Structure formats: C-alpha cells, structure tokens
Image (cartoon, rainbow, N blue to C red; front, top):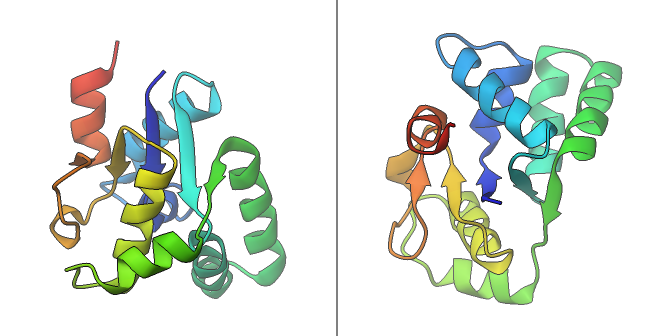
Length: 138
C-alpha cells in the first residue's frame, strides 16, 4: 500500500472547498479514507490547521473538522531528529522542512502538496494531488 504525507494546503482545499483544487484533493482524501492509501499529516499540521480553519469556520467547527481528519490520517511525529535536520536544511520555509523530514521518518512514498517548489526533492517525490492520481489511480 502506498503511503503519503499530505501538506496543509491539501486539507484546506477539501474542507474549505477551494476551487479548482477541491475535486482532485477530495478524490485522494477518499482513497485514504477507504484505506486504499495510508495517509499521514505532520503533527505540526494540526495546530496550524486549527488556526486557519477557525478563522474561516468557527472554533467548534474547526475542532470537529480536526476530529474527522484525525480519524482518517495517522500522525507523523516531530521529534528532536526531525527538528535538528530541519534547522540545517536548505528550505525556504521551516514548516516545509519539518514536514519533509517527518515524511522521511514515517517512510512515506511521497509528499502531497500544491506547493512543490517549496520542497527540496532529493529523497522523496513531491506530487500534487492531480499528479499522484494520474500516476497511481487504478
């Protein structure tokens, strides 16, 4: 079974129904929900998602959304090694570095994001939801 770590923008596309990204993100989410793929979110993503969702929805809806997300996704830990690697990495965005090294830690096959240019692509493929679906959809 393929394993993916999904970036925050992927989750926001679904739960905020952001067009034109919603459809492909929702299809990929459904594959994770149906256990055709193993999906991870970085532990760092949950507080950030809460903050962003609560601004768009409200606190109660944001928490309910995170509960749904947590049922579907496993959590990729952020530990000392992930932080240490991220601190010395050549990433524009520290959060992306943390997600990248969390992906390596859980041995995921790829990162799913719309912001591919934000990732150093030397060990793990970085794909958009559309690219992933085109490559691996049965």
